[in-house]
Length: 204
Image (cartoon, rainbow, N blue to C red; front, side, top):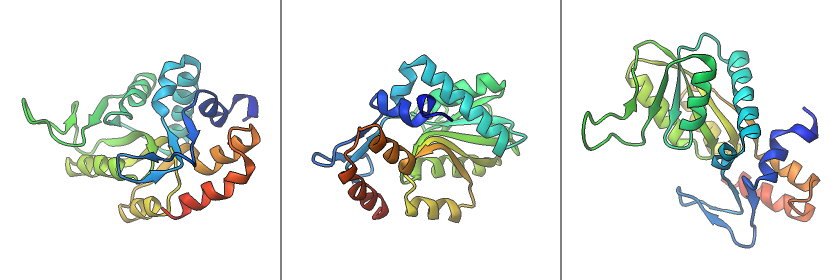
């Protein structure tokens, strides 16, 4: 892929991936981070949204065959799961972090078919907890989870270990290393800060 049309460049240009070593961000998990990735911004840019959708379709066809349904992780994984399900003409599900406290009290929304082969869609992987919980819920309902796909991964060692322990494959369109290196190349991140950014990730 040429630099002029790369996902890394797109994410940096729209501010979906930002660096703030001096004023770090606090994640929902409580992790204090010098970087923040907000892939939800990509939904507001139709060319980038289409680029990601098509990249996901190619990834799934290449790495995960015979898929019966697409499942989005609530909430950030739902939009791209919807786009993928529509593009691939497949059933769509989504998985809540907790069951509703009213109505049918569902945790998985959509028609669940036992033994269906499902791909789980998430916007990014940090600790991996939400994706792993969604996969566990689908497995408990008798589905075969083929793998997780996401736009981005921080490539944290603890996350990798959790996926291995769960015997679950994951694939991403880009990752922390590639984005950080592109950020230096395109002057979004001073070269002197790259080592510290990488050391922070490796401690997680």
